[in-house]
Length: 385
Ligand code: SOE
Image 1 (cartoon, protein in one colour):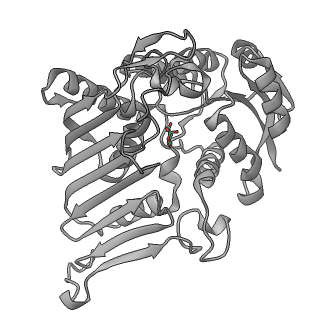
Image 2 (tube, rainbow, N blue to C red):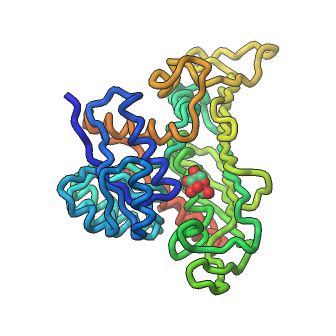
Image 3 (cartoon, rainbow, N blue to C red):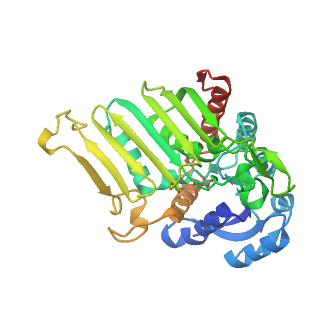
């Protein structure tokens, strides 16, 4: 017997669309008991949210998130609104006993994240943070390769997350489209927005990061604020580089910027171990590259004239998530990572096994982000709390 799960979506931007698309398609591709129903969406601007509701097929809309949370016919609150709204909404939604799905980064800082974790844990409500890249089949396959012991002792983790959309000095900060450039709304720049993704993936694959040494730069120091019309100081980090040591003894380097001309959403990582290496590039997302040096079970080395990087086309039924989609060789895309994440969340409601990353796990990422920003400020190595 299927059971409807009534969704209350807050926000109508990029993530509001990505999540809504997942709600609409998950039940068609995954056979799960809980079936999302687009019950209501919510945003302050009535004309925008009304049009959004009509476009995506929401049954109703609200212009005040408190009203949405108070509704008895809503089971799940999904937060796709800017970062500075997450905490207040989470605290109210948890108190009302709603399940909560929250966009990344979890919070503006660790202090907020702690409060949010305490609230959902005290209320005992299901929770997840939308770190969607874990659900790229090739990245999930990377996790499988690591867990199967194919990398062996890890030495190096290397991540890049590069974009180029803020290079022009006349791009304003703030407002509905550009709140990511306004530090009071976003909390930080590339650290919380892009490196949070890289950190979540890194810790998932290679375990906890223990200490970091970072540097940040803000290339354009002042921008017009879209809401006030005034030229204001830019408070976000435009670029961030950091070095890290993982608990397992391996070293990491991370770099992120929105000033890498020509790079649009260039999210890559490489992990080098004694027995093998893996490499992933989001601009070529159907592939996982794997270098096999030794057999994980026997330790026997591959004959050296046959070693080389394998480019695995991650579209077989045996690959993570792919049996739910098309036939081997047919690819899925960016939007499906949200559908896959949602499917995992719905499955967790059936099995009772908490889905990952939940708020507590996302708080760990937030701790690394805060340590990175603290290190950039002090110029010192900082231990991750
Ligand atoms: C920023 O440009 C952004 O939209 C991030 O906020 C998303 O999380 C990332 O996946 C794509 O880039």
